[in-house]
Length: 81
Image (cartoon, rainbow, N blue to C red; front, side, top):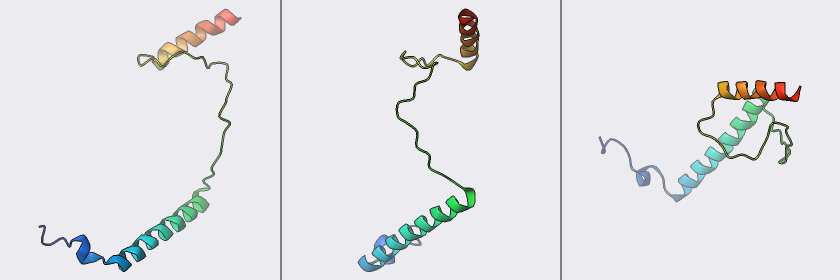
């Protein structure tokens, strides 16, 4: 099996490797541009400091579940009203 797969030195010398690397970069850039045009991908930047009402500075809880959050949100809404 190993004899069937050519080694790096058998495939490339220094010049052909640079040509191959350059072509990979060019093809990837062209691919990204074409995909961005086809799928209308846009890069949106948001402010780093986002002030949200629900954000507090408590550390993350690995045992926090969405259904518990919904109950807490309902209780918080009832307290505010």
